[in-house]
Length: 565
Image (tube, rainbow, N blue to C red; front, side, top):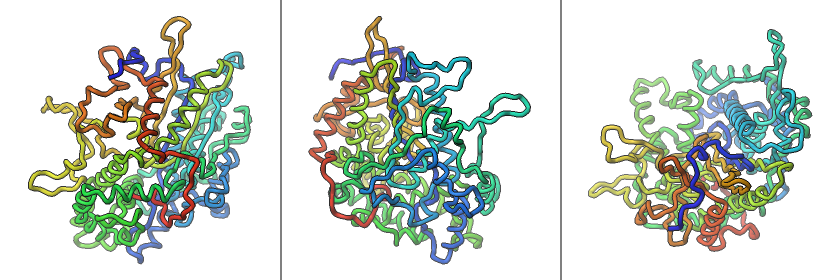
């Protein structure tokens, strides 16, 4: 094993050092369900409800106008013609799949939290105007902000709202105190009102307040806003499924064809059939990759539970089961499926990312792009702005990055799943346990719990790569990388050699480099050279699947990268 590098005080895991570069991958905010899954005769009723939960697209609606147009005044989208002719991919099923009011508020809150963090711990341009005399901190004077998105309205609006919270402060004078106070708007999904009225309340809460930014805010920041780029499909690093659909389709089909996948996914057929009795649209929804033994799209099945819970909508609402004599029994049966469904979805993507070529194809392009920017940032002078890069994408992208960098709770093997999901004399599928694993099995009374491979990125989840400048000795500086998932530094056990296992099973944990692990008062940090080695191994394992120079010309009928569960 390579000798440990960058052994530093444990405080470097959180805030110590100067943050001189920031790269944030975030999932879009809360949205309406991606597809309608109920019986046809309930479509209008449920559709009307979800319309009440999303910002209107028409300025004549009288409920705040076109939120996207308002945001675009300050954070203008720039969509390359190669991306569906410059048109979004997800606007054909409105209101299904659209960013909700709750999702907008989530992303603004996330942007605001990051502003406060980097105002305090981030790089500041030297020799410039240093916020003297209590002058408001001008984020864009210190940070070179760029925003990239996949070609979906919900991801573009999500990063627009993130920017709104980051640099759009919309200060107002408090008449009582004379001080400047930040205006806040709250309208969450967890309202206490009955679900059929809650959406109306959200609309009223956002009346004529489709964006928090004002022209004065942007001008005060010293710029004309930040553009949101959807780049040339051939060069876009965020969505390999859309960029090279045929290659990705072939890679996933190879995984599906394995004996292990056929057996375990086939064991989930009974669960799929029971769920389809409540959600008949599952059987009619498109299946990616030509279909799998279980016969349904598990992204859509999981989506049903997530969206209903987020908006306090009863699971049986808008169905033939609502109000019937056996409603309680039906609700109990449907509720019992939630954890197994979400766990099985996580297992399926775990199987995708066991495939080295598939994992490299999805994760290597953004990681390589980030590495190049880090090297450039490390050589910048103190009087230059530092990179602050936002990538608005999807849950499957965040998962791939975590598997690629070796997030310990996904690859450590404490709860390995896969072929071990079959107990002796008993057939089970992967969704029968909670998404938690006992880490300290020696302590039976109070076992430590952590997320297992069943973890799934929630709406507005963030993975942050912070490049931190440290002074090891007087006059000698180095850079390390801090990885933060949803506000918490995570431990990494990356693959630094082709001989290392992708997901540990036979290889002992102690044989691997462990970054972010604490020993006494010290922790080992990921250096730039370690990160470069991680990417090199990933690229070699991909055997050409990571190239941005090739683009599939074949048109695939399904957008299986985002919805292909």
